[in-house]
Each structure stands twice: as structure tokens, then as C-alpha cells.
Length: 196
Image 1 (cartoon, rainbow, N blue to C red):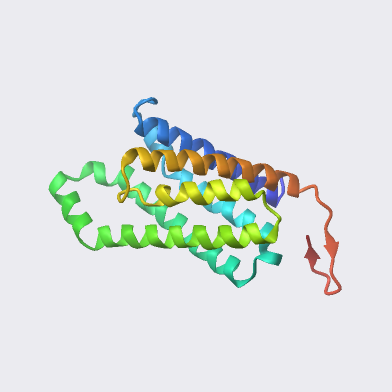
Image 2: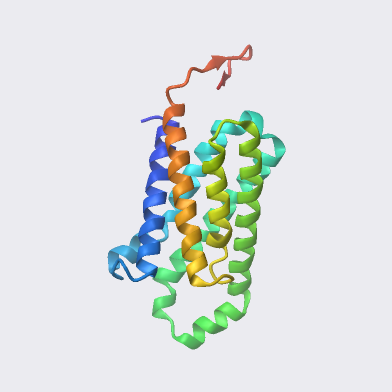
């Protein structure tokens, strides 16, 4: 399995995990050890997916696309750490300790991560649409969904969950584009580098 197809699989897995997380938070899927264990991996598989998407569009994405990708990737890495803490660390702490952490530097780190992720999503999405290499509606769904999806504690729960569903649809759509990209012809530049 090659790069774009691996990224496409990661994107599909990301979309599925996001939907499972939404269903769990909405009370439709039960809270089990398994549903909690897989929850953080939505952000991690999203990191692999966004890397594949950036590699596909990098030729036309320019500096805005590069900076957007780096911020998006950093935000997703931070989101993975946050989800890991929420599912595997916070449950063993008492309510007062959690409140103290969220009121201090931990809460500030969560907020900074959210801002970095939203900024990266918007910059990357704008650059990706400009290249014309990704389906604009898929990119738009990803961007629109990730705004509330990144702001977990700043928006009402229904808005957060709807955002995750919209983002998941966008990610699944972009995954199909990544899968088909593997079959596209490549042109060898004069330098010997492979260009798409």
C-alpha cells in the first residue's frame, strides 16, 4: 500500500472514529473501555491524513499551505494529547484536581491547542481550495466542521458534535481523493524529482 492510499485509509479511519465519538457523547453508543480507548486516535489518524493531503497539494499550496499544514498538524498532535489525557488521566483524578488543572496552565495549553488547530485548518483549507487539487466542498466541510470541533469547551455540546459530524463527512470525501491520487501519472522533472 503506497503513501496516498495509506493516508486515505487513515482519513477513513479518522472519519469513523469521529462518528463513533459523536455517537458515544450523544449516548447512542455505550461508554465502554473500547469506545474510550479508540477516542484519541481520531486526532492521530487525522494527522496522518492531513499529511497525505498536504503532500498532494504542496506544489500549489505555497507558504500559506505549508504554514497551515504545520499548524494543522501541530493542533492535531495537541488534540491527541488532550484526548489521551481526558480519557486515560482525568478519570483517575478527583473533581477538585481536574478543576485546578483546567484553571491553570493545563487549561491554557488546551486553549492554545484549539487556537492553533483552528488557525491551521483555515489556512490549510484556503490554500488547498486555491490549488484546485482537492474537492472544494470536501475541504469546506472539513474546515466548517473543525471550527466547532476544535473548540470543545468553548461551544455548546450539540454544536461541537455537529461540527465533528460535518468534519467527518469532509474527511471521508477527501479520503476518496487521496485514494484516487495514487493512480495518477507522475512527471519526472529535469532535476530527477518526481512531480504530480
